Length: 326
Image (cartoon, rainbow, N blue to C red):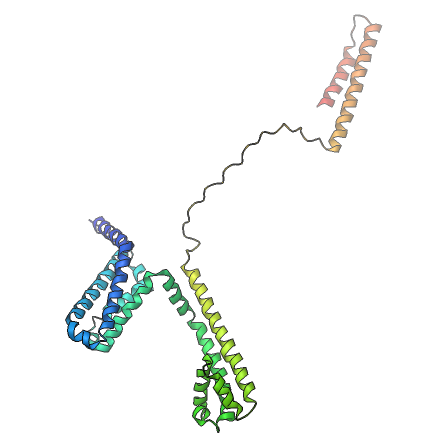
């Protein structure tokens, strides 16, 4: 009886996984997001609302119900391991968006409800890996952006103080206070109207050329390139995070084909080392001398005492030859 719920949960999770991973499911989800965005945009036209307000509300309810069903299917795909569902940030985001629309206070607040409906458009990001990488890169760049904002604020503040001391009396609407000077310099980061600003500064002092030129180099060029570098580094880290981990199972590579066997001639064995060759020559010379001695003793023994072979000497010589051969 305990195995039945587990088996049923496994079958339900498998069916939900097949549905969620199907191409038509992602296409339908993206289509609902587009329809929701179009309805949200049409509601900004009073004439459309007066003529088809009820139809637009009905479509909005259908989209909301479809989003809820999609969320249930995604949770069903992780039915055997529910913790994995909540470890996915996009699943938590969808759950918050759908659940917040059911809160009693949000249903009566038109502005909050429209913001929640507008947040559903952001759900399109999860359907495209490229958009996920971009959003992930932006989120990863937030710590670096904090340091960048501190450096940029300090730079603009220093230039604003110098601008207040130099141009505060001549142009109080731009440099009358340090706040106004910082706002003016912040707008100059885009280099819009820099020519007119430079000409107006030259009427006060020729040193304004150095002031604005250094500000353009430091604030507009260096700080902008620093910001681009921070974002590019964060995007690279997001790309690395989207790649499969080294521990993931990989497709086994086929073994390389064996090298073709090329018939070759029998190579002679390598020559023995020099010391071994010397020892072999000495041993061969000793054996030749021993054989010559045996032959001489045999001749002498046969001539001196016929019928009595020199067995003693021959056996001793034979033993010496045996030891040398060993």
